[in-house]
Image (tube, rainbow, N blue to C red; front, side, top):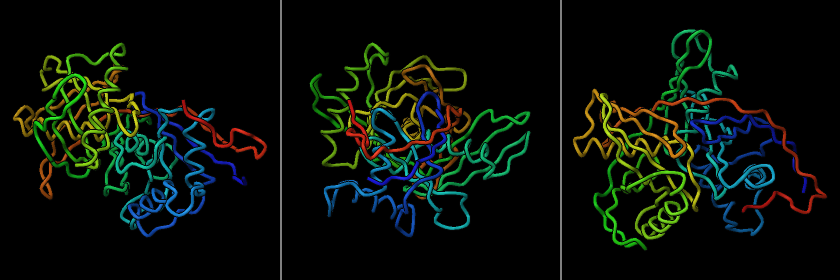
Length: 327
């Protein structure tokens, strides 16, 4: 297999990895980011050929061991839909291509400033506009003393789809809330979100997703624990199980948008309040409401991304493991 060297810049956002492919990517056909995803998704599923296409070969190379792992996440840089945006991105993970990714948007905002793609002041805020498969989103990159101190992700409108939808599981029938925040998330209250509970929560998330996939294009399941409110507003801890049992180490950016819309509908979050949203590893996003548009709630989710490495990956044609394996 002839594969050029693939160069990436890696970040983590609140503990969740994001691998940005900056060189070595094959041509990605399509006239828009959404169309490029649809084409990539079809090729990845082997619609006309059981072998993966060049793009999916790169996805496998970067998400599978020994170069990646089952929890790896990343983005292919592609042209934006028009010249009003700075860049476009196809989000990828071990199982395919997602429509939205808040933690990835935060990392891309930091990278766009770090790389010089988008000029930024030493003190102030740079606005990075990004076309993703679900629409156009914005990363507000906040700077102090020449350093990025936080990135605020402004999402596409979030719409509540269903409330208290009963779902039969191995632990009984649960009431599930659903919202579309660029990707569809199911929210379920649980007693505790801790690393010790992770195997049980992962299996529960997979059960719920499997039960609802026939009715909704469900991407992730947010299992959340209520914590005492802060002076600023609600406080929750969650673990998000997405794709085929993948775990978000961060509080989940687009998932936080879903939680904000549901809390607003419940009357628990007002325009002057914020949600403190913790992950299973203790990292934090904060979220607030910005208003309404196109029948949905506008949200802003703030976190921080840090660069973790620069990589140049290659595939040795004599390597029997090829693009790798998943455990």
